[in-house]
Length: 401
Image 1: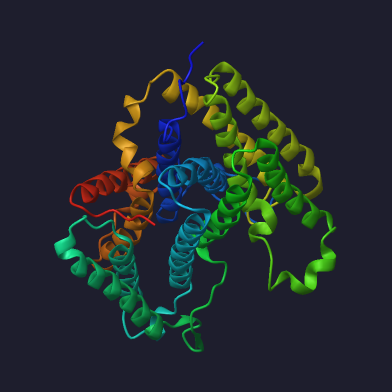
Image 2 (image 1 turned 180 degrees about the horizontal axis):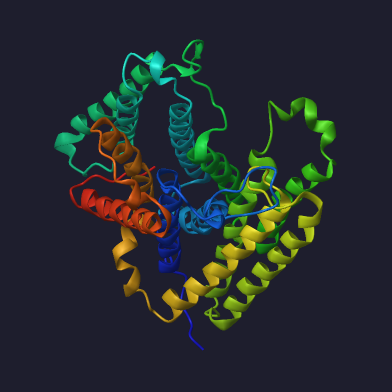
């Protein structure tokens, strides 16, 4: 039986799981540029009892966020950080994700005709400001003031973009709002709740499982009507996704805590894989078992969607852990590694790409954006973004929060 000798600072399978997920995320996010896309690849509508590939990618990413939390917090504790410092760091990361998420979701609601600048110029300015603020600058004391000035300029740029922003209807434009916080904002709220939960529970498995079940059951209770008495406060204070999104994150936390507890006893191998597959199977059974009541829907964040996507995530991680950390078969993923280690950079590059090509009036022929050929085009685009991410990393551009 293959064994991992001790609990390392990180697992290669987590980074490569993240890289594969980012490849798929960029791919499905590019489907809007195509015609004739198969329905099973797209997001299902809210009223449908269905789930496409696009509905699985985001839950998988949230699960990976959870996989990373125990390792990240443990590493900070090994460096001597107190709980107060760790909580401050969690708060800073959450603030960054929420701020970026709010700006991005407002871009999606922008009233281009009411703006003093093109919406695409506004978009480019937004992403450039993100890079100025959260870039990993070199450790050079002599230029520390320059890097601080760039960060300040980034914040001032965001403030300026907020001042000129017009959203909604061009005839009756409105200012910026939180809306649904955007993808990054949802990640931020889910990360905040789950990271704080782990600060409290540590690697005590029963407590971690309890935290996971709390969010799963909160989601179930909301759909069952048990929480209707909380409707008066729901629009002011609520758990994001009615518990669904932190449930995905906490599922990942559970998987990592099980690994960490057993790795310290030199007991990682086939037994761990069995545990992951069993947990995945239980989640799938829960998902399909609740499907007759509320259907599968990402938009509505139904219990069936939570269960099925969590089950897929557990089983996918089991396979990647076996392949990468146990069998050491990982050279195949070298080309997509930047997507797993510079994820935020990878996620933001398409925003600049789409804005630049639109301003330049560049558009591919419809023959390259239809059917199977179009799908190949989107896959190539996803790979191009990852390669660009690696290239800008090598010249010192990499976001980290």
